[in-house]
Length: 216
Image (cartoon, rainbow, N blue to C red; front, side):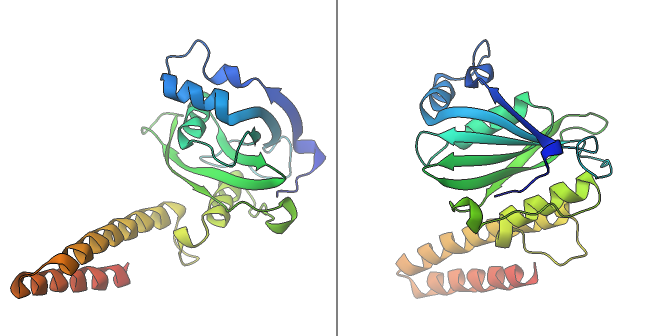
């Protein structure tokens, strides 16, 4: 799914117990690690020291973790826990039954002046065979490489013009999702509403929201 030079290769096995032993996590999350994951491999480190890229302002390194699963499903809370424990940006490649799926979190600084990050949301590709969906490292520095990977993996979920920042694209996608949920809820109400006047009011609200959606 992602072809990288040998200089980035690590291929270190990380015991999955590292992410839940001696930590105060819920029994449900511990169960996800135990039952859903077969193994975790730290495959690559993408950084100025391992590849010809300039340092980024926000992104120092990008780690590539390969996670072999016991089925084609992984609870998102598992990725969140790994992201909490690893202080770098991470590209996850999930593997099951010969297919792969790429996951990446859109991260922003947790607080001004700190080096910590929070994951606002995850994006992922469909399950494909490795040769069917190739990701590319585009950009001259680590910030650009990370941003372009997020956009490649998110696809249509982060529609944008070339001029806007990743943050702007993310905020716009959040607004669109919120409006779509509001429209769907109002359409459901309008469908079941028996009073003509109230039904007309709901349809007018839907019309306004759809116009707002078109402007985003």
